[in-house]
Image (cartoon, rainbow, N blue to C red; front, top):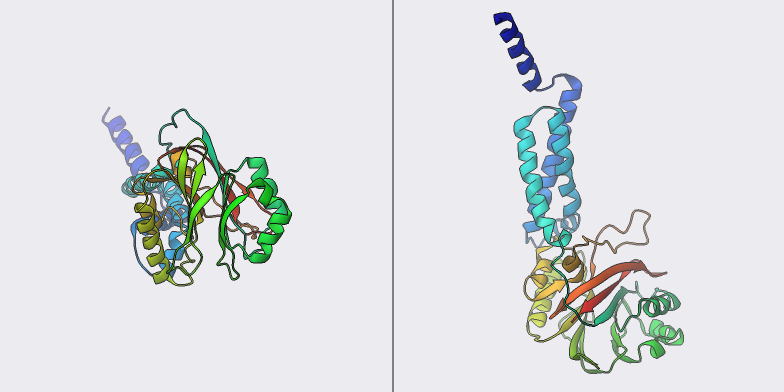
Amino acid sequence: MINDLVRDQQVAEEITRPRRGLLGWLLLVSGWLLLLAGAIGVGLHYNSWVWEPAILVTSFASYLMVGTLIAIVLLGLARQWVSTALAVAVSATALWTQAPMLWPDGTAPAGTDLVVMQSNLFLGHGSPEGLVDAARDSGAEVLTLDELTPGLLDRLDAAGLADLLPHRYAAPSGGGQGSGIFSRYPLRDGIKFEGFWLNNLRATMIHPGLGPITVFALHPIPPLSNAEVWTRELGRIRELLDAESGRVVVGGDFNATYDHTAYRNLVSGRYADSTELLGVGAMPTWPTDRFWGPVIGIDRILVAGGHATAVHSLPITGTDHRAVVAHLRL
């Protein structure tokens, strides 16, 4: 009986003892590297550094966080139980950071949807026929455009945009500066905000059933152009949004992902990201002109005073962004 107890104790020690040899070390080192990557991703999610490299890597923070899930498996196989427990804790924190984008925020009340479409036209290279067809097929009632050039605006009208969405407030320009708001219903009080590198617009749409709805077409500069200006512009956008009351619809290329603190500040009050409301995740929209894209979601439709019932992205020929279409219940 004593021999049996000794043998059982030896078996238990063998089970709990970390694996030795090359395989064990490979599992341990790989697991810890992935755990470190995930922890960095979590840290980047909460950082507010005005530093171009950090802002760039933060765009991919959620991909780094996936490493914690793989680390759990590798460290578990290596029988490193303390390290595995740490990986579980970091993984839980990573999931917590992404939970708002993965968990629906209830359901929309009964009512009529407003269909909103947002598209970046890549320095005016987007296909006018492709864009108009997409707007028509999606039933868009409001369209916000970025990187709209004067020449492309003429081609859009020739393709039928003026008939489809006859009301507009547009500020086309070269060099990626141009923007526009197009509507099925009358627009008034259009304004181009000063102090931005690119054209950021606001107008009031008069909906026949819902009354006045404020519409923004926004496009802060890319952070790699100037991180300080990018931070300042996103802060200014928050001030502009917070100053509005009533129903508001926002379309834009924000040049920021949900993992950027500056973007989350925009949706921390009464504004909500349509993808966040429906829990569909990051919904990558850029870049579409690379074989490995799109990988990050920077094109967004926000709403205040309403909910979302559907959201999806779609390709537009000639652009490096996917367009976004959201059905909003205001």
